[in-house]
Amino acid sequence: MRMCLVNSKILRQLWSVVEQTQSSTLLGLSDTDLVKLLLGQIESNKVLNHEETCSLTDYIYSRILLIRDLAQSRSA
Image (cartoon, rainbow, N blue to C red; front, side):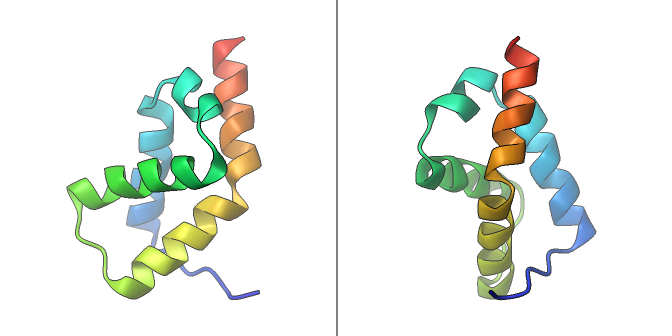
């Protein structure tokens, strides 16, 4: 498994996007589509280089369950 190094500014943006995204969207998408959505939101605000994109993709995949748990708790 490759080490995921994502800078703190990008991580803050990611979790802000997660908080701003509708719970139903976060819960309704496949893992792949969820990663694409979140990456797209980050990239619309900041151009990521290839290494940042790869690291952020790995990070999001490693946190899918947490993202869905947060969305589920918001919708309850």
